Length: 52
Image (cartoon, rainbow, N blue to C red; front, side, top):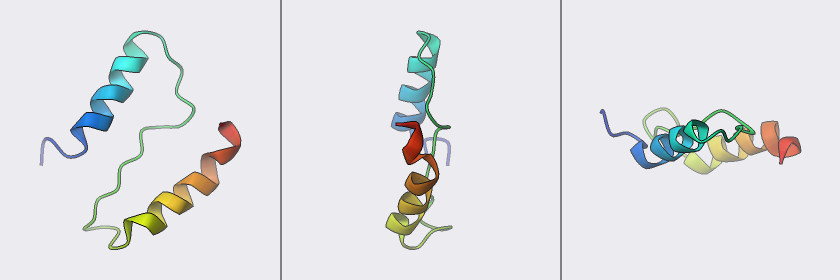
Protein backbone atom coordinates (compact mmCIF):
# COMPACT_ATOMS: atom_id res chain seq x y z
CA UNK A 1 0.00 0.00 0.00
CA UNK A 2 1.09 3.56 -0.63
CA UNK A 3 1.78 4.50 2.99
CA UNK A 4 3.91 1.43 3.83
CA UNK A 5 6.69 2.63 6.15
CA UNK A 6 5.80 6.18 5.17
CA UNK A 7 7.23 7.87 8.28
CA UNK A 8 10.67 6.31 7.86
CA UNK A 9 10.76 6.96 4.13
CA UNK A 10 9.65 10.56 4.67
CA UNK A 11 12.33 11.16 7.32
CA UNK A 12 14.97 9.58 5.05
CA UNK A 13 14.07 11.93 2.19
CA UNK A 14 13.80 15.00 4.42
CA UNK A 15 17.29 14.38 5.75
CA UNK A 16 18.62 13.88 2.22
CA UNK A 17 16.96 17.13 1.14
CA UNK A 18 18.96 19.08 3.73
CA UNK A 19 22.21 17.43 2.74
CA UNK A 20 22.51 14.57 5.19
CA UNK A 21 24.54 11.65 3.87
CA UNK A 22 22.91 8.28 4.61
CA UNK A 23 25.02 5.64 6.33
CA UNK A 24 22.80 2.98 4.76
CA UNK A 25 19.89 2.83 2.37
CA UNK A 26 16.42 3.16 3.80
CA UNK A 27 15.51 -0.32 5.08
CA UNK A 28 11.93 -1.51 5.39
CA UNK A 29 10.52 -4.80 6.63
CA UNK A 30 7.35 -6.21 5.14
CA UNK A 31 5.79 -8.73 7.53
CA UNK A 32 4.46 -10.67 4.54
CA UNK A 33 8.02 -11.25 3.33
CA UNK A 34 9.64 -11.61 6.76
CA UNK A 35 7.31 -13.35 9.25
CA UNK A 36 9.83 -12.66 12.04
CA UNK A 37 10.78 -9.02 11.45
CA UNK A 38 13.48 -9.12 14.11
CA UNK A 39 15.42 -11.65 12.01
CA UNK A 40 15.41 -9.32 8.99
CA UNK A 41 16.40 -6.35 11.16
CA UNK A 42 19.24 -8.28 12.78
CA UNK A 43 20.57 -9.45 9.40
CA UNK A 44 20.46 -5.86 8.07
CA UNK A 45 22.19 -4.50 11.17
CA UNK A 46 25.00 -7.04 10.86
CA UNK A 47 25.60 -5.85 7.29
CA UNK A 48 25.74 -2.14 8.15
CA UNK A 49 26.91 -1.91 11.78
CA UNK A 50 30.46 -0.95 10.76
CA UNK A 51 29.14 2.22 9.14
CA UNK A 52 27.90 3.63 12.44
